[in-house]
Length: 444
Ligand code: SAH
Ligand code: SF4
Ligand code: F3S
Image 1 (cartoon, rainbow, N blue to C red):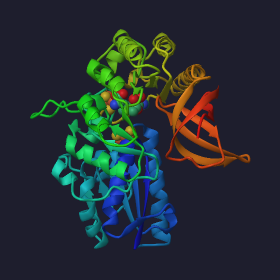
Image 2 (cartoon, protein in one colour):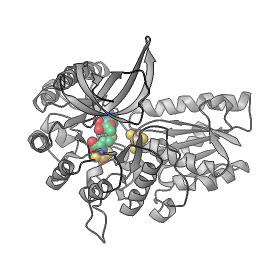
Image 3 (cartoon, rainbow, N blue to C red):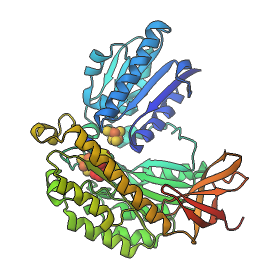
Image 4 (cartoon, rainbow, N blue to C red):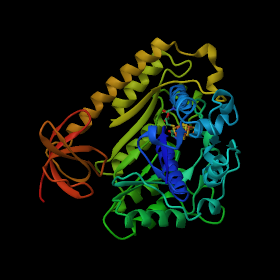
């Protein structure tokens, strides 16, 4: 048996790709190790959403290159994921000790690549033609990370070309996977004991737009998955604001397994900035969507993403982002300082770049606002009894804690000395902190 170590950076899509790659490698007698020092094959699954994530990948393989040179000339090193897709052969110039470069479109070539690499060849597989659904469905296992939740990609790629974003260049055009493939994967995960299915896509709510032979969208998929036997939860991320249909919102309410949670990135609270970002909505349109979701879905949690210091963003425009978080009562948001990305439109507006110190200061102010609102949002649930799916169990300062999530994606810590991981429990919410709720087991 050989050992493989994969360091995964970036979003859930990359994590899901890693689980698939580990499944393929298992066919070639590679077992996963969590200790890179003992691996025969080291792989990094990279993210290029910001410069920092790209830099991290190069710094990591730098270390691995050194190990190879000093200790183990037979060590194989693979560079995969979004940076690979974008830079292809360039990687070999920058890091000659890399044995193969594998882009996001071609992960199903990994078995071929491994055979070539083990014969001493160098391989770069980064063409932009995506492998077909048939290629993807070879009977490889998926080596899912041990957890209560199984990630299932339903659509990949993006057609939106927001002016700051690299994803359309690293993941290509939008492609929906076939319903039957997704349903089978979900059933397999449930059979394996997973208690939650999270459907993944850069824009999960545009699922099915590209089907020419059928009218089958996210709401239809949710209905079919909801019909599978057993007690489990269904979630989906990420929603593009204007692709959330009334039917989808109503379906979420109707289906008992689909959770009351929407991740709807707004990016900026200013309509002018949104226009420059090439987002297809303004502040008012976003407001209407959020209002509708809140009205129809009881207890819904709505989270968002924001970018601080987009090129040309004025102080007033930035303040509109702060007021948006309050006005729309966003329960939680991810924030990033704008990072110029190669090939994207906004990266060319060099004269409009916001100085690093200003970006950083805005980033801090945004985070402070988000923390305040997160606590406010959590306080609403104190005194309520909620259903929690326990995800982990640990000891802290002599106390045993079960941690899990409510249907509306709030984290709850429940002191209890038995491991309830994987179980649905009811708990009374007794307190709220910024990042979690405290609960007491209601029955057991
Ligand atoms: N498809 C989703 C977002 C996917 S990318 C959507 O449209 O909302 C995840 C997040 O990374 C984005 O929401 C954005 O906030 C952030 N992001 C993307 N490109 C960025 C860049 N160049 N600089 C900083 N943050 C960026
Ligand atoms: Fe990037 Fe925009 Fe596509 Fe989201 S919708 S992945 S931000 S281009
Ligand atoms: Fe990063 Fe690629 Fe995901 S750029 S955020 S890993 S799609």
